[in-house]
Length: 195
Image (cartoon, rainbow, N blue to C red):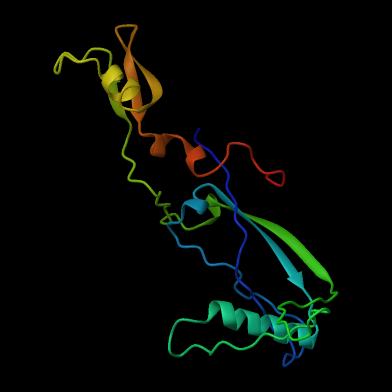
C-alpha cells in the first residue's frame, strides 16, 4: 500500500479588503504555507479554494473572529474583543450569541500541484525514520535462525518482495508497518475529485 490519500479542512480565516484599492480585486494573496519537506507534497497536492464576497459588516465580523482565534498568545497581539454578529437569541436577548448570516457570491477553484513542479531539493520527510527494506531469510546460515518467523511473523514486519536463491524462494524483504503501509495515515481510495 504505497499510495494513500488524506485530507483536512483549514481552520484559518484568510480575509482581505479591496476598500482602499483602485480595483475591486485581491490578487496573489497567500492562501496556504507548506514546508518544503512536508509529506503532503511527496506526489501530488490539491487544494480547494473558496472565495466569498462580504459586506462591510460581514468583513468586520470575520476580521474580529480571526483576531480572536488566530492572533492570541504574544504580548504584541490584539486583545480579545467581544464578537457581535447579526444573530440574536429570541428567548433571552441578554444571551451572547456568536455568528453572522449573510448572502454573498461564491467562487471556488480546485488546483493540483505535482511534485515535478516543485524544486528538486524539496524532499518529503516522512513522520517515521524509514530505512531501506531489510532482508529476512527462511534460514540464515550465519545466525542459523528462521528470520521470516522471527522478524515478520512474530516481529510484526510487513513482507514487501520475495527473495530468490538458486531459483527457490529464500525469504522476503520487509519493513515496519509504519514505513510500508500508508493506510496508517490515509486511505487507499482516491477522493472523487482526484485526477
